Image (cartoon, rainbow, N blue to C red; front, side, top):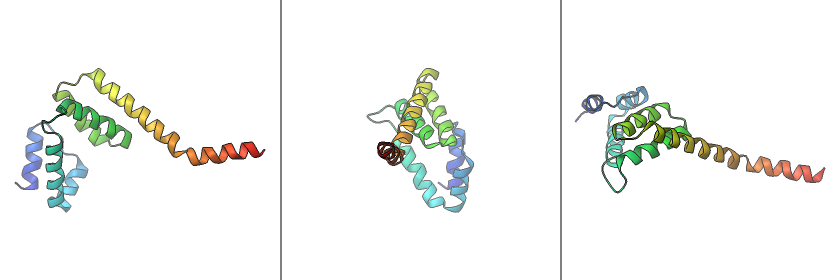
Length: 120
């Protein structure tokens, strides 16, 4: 199946093919196909239901600031039974996780400020 055929199949299934993925597909069809195959394998039935995989992906996409991934995974989650409340809760979890990384990333500067304050 060509990359064009894969994109058409995605559209028929209700998925949106975002412009960055289209560009990637135009420039490197082989690796784009590998990416799509990995996504298919990751989001197939397994120990974790697809709904929960999609909810986890929403949280990760929010924390990583990826609007197209957020949208696609919200659609996937709702198609697999996720409620608005569940989606809003994983977005809140992402907000907390992202805030925690901000504090953690600031640790060296906070230590410097604390040490400076002790010297004064």
